[in-house]
Image (cartoon, rainbow, N blue to C red; front, top):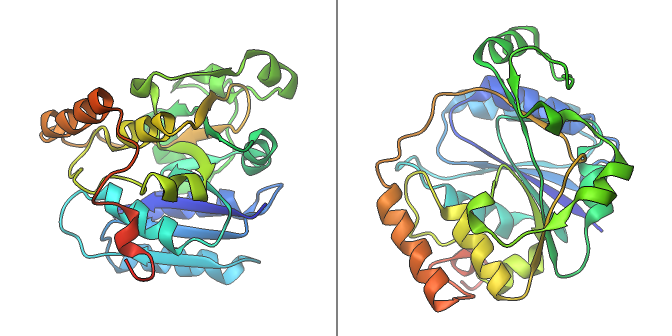
Amino acid sequence: MRISLVVSTYNRPDALALVLRSALGQELAPHEIVVADDGSGVETRAALEEAASRAPFPVHHCWHEDRGFRLAEIRNRAIAQARGDYIVMVDGDLVLQHSFLADHARTSRPGRMVQGGRVILSEAVTRDALVRGRIEFGPFEPGTRNRKNALRSLILSRLVSFEVRDVYRVRGANLAFWREDALRVNGFDERFVGWGREDSEFVARMQHAGVRRLALKFAAVAFHLWHPEASRALLPKNQEILDRTLASRTTRCELGISRHLPGG
């Protein structure tokens, strides 16, 4: 199984540098990293090129012009470019524990997608980590939330991980799935512009198509660097798209990844 690690980012090169450092130190190396860049400036390219110079595998920069928050589209572009069988998708502010990819590989099954958790680092811890270049954190880190998510135990993970269907519990910051399943539902719906619900709608269509979702506990540990919240101004419009998908049990969107594939 070839893993493509897809890292989404926008104009946060210091955080991206830490995330890529943590990706290069994985117990199980990915086949490649694809950075899904929603229109960042040259500083982000510099951070990516520095990591690529040290990586024993390809690190690709998938970029499009900055025309506002278009996370759905840039993720589609990155998945279309990826050459792995299995996509592990993280945000560019999620620092990965060294066993992160190994845990995702261990829990992968045909017809399954895996939802991991995250530990929320405080603003002070984040600022210190960015200054010091720190990528290691623990469950007893002061000033953190969801600290139980920092505990890793494969025995506990097997006992308490469970299948879930609630699309409002989706977090695209730590989500893994088979590339062929994503292509079958035509990836993310690019009608989503602005923050909110693009992850939930994608997962809803995957579930309508028969893909089960595992809520993974005590494994695939990751630490979320603090940042100000994005604008929710377009959330009502995005909610309407999700509501229509849920009501109609749609499996495939019209404006999706196919337009970025050869012949699309």
